[in-house]
Length: 233
Figure 1 (cartoon, helix red, strand yellow):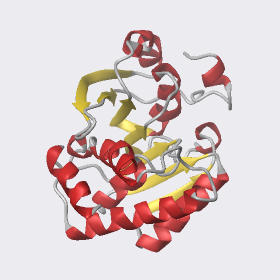
Figure 2 (figure 1 turned 180 degrees about the vertical axis):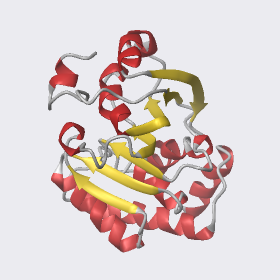
Figure 3 (figure 1 turned 90 degrees about the vertical axis):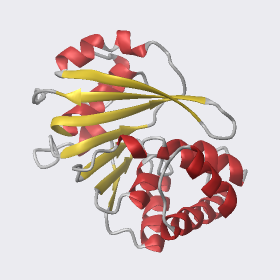
């Protein structure tokens, strides 16, 4: 798998070290073992996991700015993209959040096994986790989710500092940007650029929307648990 992984990293133009490759392969081994008794991902094939989880996450690597010091991944699941990016960016403090305990238990195991001191694991919903301490405290927001952009924005933007960046990952272009205009206005944010990528082997398309927070967020956002999903801005 090492050669396959390195080939993919080269194809998407991401620099690596042997240590980072070793850690990804350890992560893969832990995921496969844990997934054998606790369902974290529907994928069981090693090459599929490498391409559609690891390399997919690393499509963001070259979009991360040199001065970013903190990042939050909301709804991280089995650690995508947050855990993968934490392995490649030891200088950035990552908060990986998910509301499902079996997933965060796995992530804690990965953190401990790989000795990742730059990772914090949180079992919570975004609406419940945010506080005066966490509000507007992150440089980078991450979410590789299936929810609509207008919903995801309400979860992520309140965590970001002014001028902070949210990199929203989508499987393909859906036109959600137009639907999210109202949410962007309310949350005082703007779309900076939309990037189109292809995975290295399957050539499946991926879209990354770069969003910048322009001003502070009204403290009434995010609304209480469940409301952003039921009634998007």
